[in-house]
Length: 222
Length: 80
Image 1: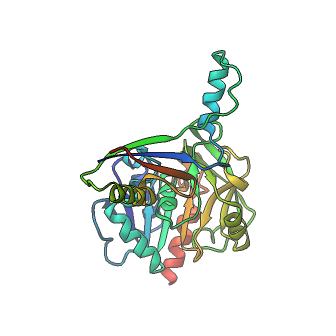
Image 2: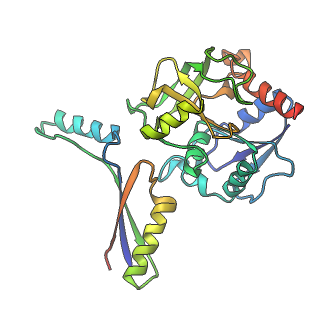
Image 3: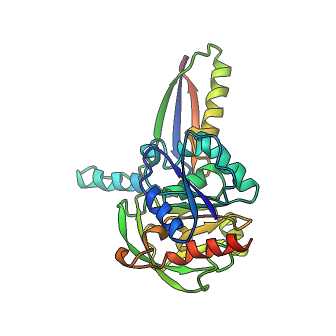
């Protein structure tokens, strides 16, 4: 499993994401946003959390127009895997690879705490290590995690089983309690909670491990 | 050529920041503030001298970057 973790100015979870993938056996390369191509043989692109470009204009908006983002869009277009966490999820909505938009939290507060998620589907390489309906605990740390969609798109995501995770207790106002969504081909996942911050007992929990392991299992057997 | 772009959340999209400003105005004693919507103003100084072309370029900029048309609407005004 070859993973490219993208680094934007202002990314701050890039190393955590690399550690999580390495723990699952991946060969990880850090890729600077000004590079215009991904390393040869990249299976998964990881877009980490942080505050790319200082959240100027809108969260993720400037990063979505970086030179590397064109390569990420092409990678996804070829059926490549992409995991966007927190700011990475915001970048994915801004590129159009995932629907909807992430707005300021409904209570206007920056929320930084462990939250319980319900795994809504095990039918993806990201979630096959969980059971549908399983409750897991993963930290969130965001100011703009209030996911919004129009009603028609929400109905489409529900019908296509593309809601990966919901919050057990919605912290940010997201529509339908959505915490993470999949692309139509189920190979792009965007989520606000941080699975890479739940991979070691010292983190206070290890519920994120299954995501990186199941990705590794899919890509080794592929 | 100076161009002004107003970016606002679309009607119907909840604006928590505008709502917080409305509450703050109320606590300052301003009564009867029924709604507050908060947006952005972006001023562009373009080398283009043709107003129609400047407007078209600014609209393209809005579509590609300045506004997220999933949740935001924009208005372009050529100031001259």
